[in-house]
Image (cartoon, rainbow, N blue to C red):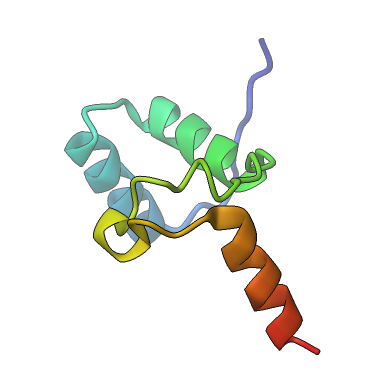
Length: 76
């Protein structure tokens, strides 16, 4: 596994990183790894079906494919 050394990290930034790591119950190294992973990983694309639980009362009875068709038609 690789080792990363950071030179000239401002003390104020390190203190913020320490506080964040403590809130997340992680070590500073684990928090840095987590932050870098979040920043650099390619997010998985979401489909409308993956979002089906969000605002379900608003989307109840709506056919997703027909909704998308209407939305796309409105762009013209």
